[in-house]
Image (cartoon, rainbow, N blue to C red; front, side, top):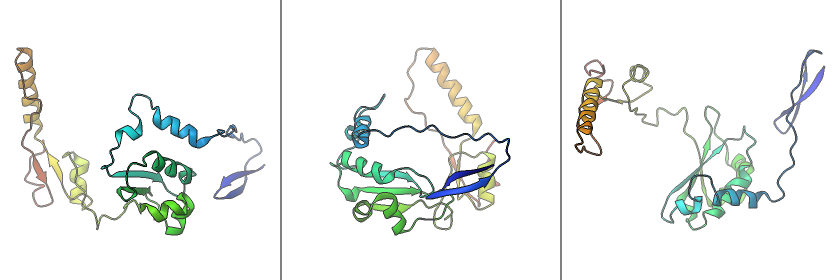
Length: 205
């Protein structure tokens, strides 16, 4: 049995066994006014203030988009978001293309994904996956995978907080509260930065 799969901008012909069951999505008609529907959702979110109310004119805004391998209509959504946040100057926006492990997109591909106006007026960058030689990565817990990553050179450093003292401070704080006494809103304990240089000397257990 021959069937066609959506692939890229066209289809891919695939031969499958005759007894195969082919599952296809149900077609749903598009919204009559897509932009108005998105604007309504942004202005009336569930459990949070409207987007425009949460973003000040002085804020810097990062919009993360899916890369060219995904059919997300970024050429529609991003301009509508920019319009909703029109009180923020365009030079305070950055659009981050989430490539994951995929290759970077070119300027021409960005224009295809976002439209020429957006690419001309807003800073668009590729996510920096796979560039450990250019980026310092630091963790926040001295668990075994983090320590192994430091030894392998995949992680620059991580933070070690002695579990004994964490537990001791937690119990003492609980006892103080049980007596009806006040405690500090935040209890900061000493921690150690673990690197290749001291990884074998720092106690992480």
